Amino acid sequence: MSAVILVTGGTGLVGKAIEYVIENEPQGSRFAKRPGEKWIFASSRDADLRDPKQTLELFEKYQPTHVIHLAALVGGLFANRERKATFLRDNMLINDNVLHTARIKKVQKVISCLSTCVFPDKIDYPLTEEKVHLGPPHDSNFGYAYAKRMVDVQNHAYKEEFGCNFTSAIPTNVFGPHDNFNLRHAHVIPALIHKCYLAKKNGTPFKVMGDGSPLRQFIYSRDLAKLFIWQLREYDDVEPVIFSVDENDEISIRDVANAIVEVMKYDLGAQFENEPNDNGQDRKPASNAKLMKLIGEFKFTPFKEALRESVAWFLDNYDNARTGHASN
Ligand code: NAP
Ligand code: GDP
Image (cartoon, rainbow, N blue to C red; front, side):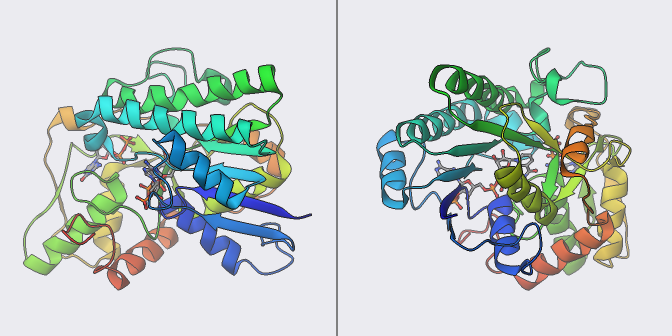
């Protein structure tokens, strides 16, 4: 079967991981590149997807048959908290342009990427796919969360009115090579890797925001990449699928910081700022029961091993990584 698969956001954390798996997975693997497939990894330089004309030009250039739609304005707790209107508007524009253009250009299938941030803040745990719209999201990131939640509404509307095969994935917190390591605006793991690196280099304290008590589930970007490839080939339903490790595999931010200290061999240990307003959501444990039932078997990379690979990538690529330095 010939297919042109356009990955929007193809230069980010998740896009680079899909590219890695497609280039490196051995033939015979369920996730390997298949004959006849052409993969395109697009960045914002190829098209600013907030702009309908540039979006159309991108689709006309590559004529995709399938789209994995990852492009988004993305950031950690502090970026989301400071720029709610921008996170709402940019992501709504990007998603609207991509889905509308995919419909016009008769794309056979679109998978869009949501996040467990979209779920209601006050809800019975674990989070499951049918709970997305059952209450308001956490206040810290409602701009991003509502924009992303709307994708599920759009997918249903496009299916009912036009018969489109649009669906979505809901990953938990992601980390890995090619992450955004910005000190203020990144997610917790890349921000703390960078902070620990500077603390070790400069002999300064390694300061961690909040009190370390919140719990998160983390998925390695290269595991997530395989799940997107599975979903592209083997899942044809409008309802989202949560992409997560087991619901019992929550890790506290304290344990994350301590693991980073260990992997980076930083002798002085982490210091917690203890400002409770900086904790964000306490926890958001998600169930992967639907995923595991559908995929049958999947081996997640152990957290420490994935952290070691991510730190190694950061150290090897410090000059070109997204660290917030003037050049990147
Ligand atoms: P990322 O590393 O920040 O990458 C974002 C990607 O989107 C980049 O390729 C970027 O292009 C592109 N992009 C941003 N604005 C764009 C625009 N206006 N037009 C076109 N492209 C644009 O983000 P990520 O972590 O890989 O996130 C990928 C997806 O996963 C997102 O949908 C995100 O919401 C979701 N997600 C992420 C996490 C997480 O913990 N990281 C958790 C759950 C869900 P440039 O390289 O040109 O800037
Ligand atoms: P969230 O899962 O959407 O809240 O996203 P994050 O990846 O930003 O994780 C936020 C959690 O990590 C909160 O409990 C923060 O208090 C904690 N944290 C500790 N230090 C940092 C940091 O330097 N950056 C970020 N983003 N979070 C941090």
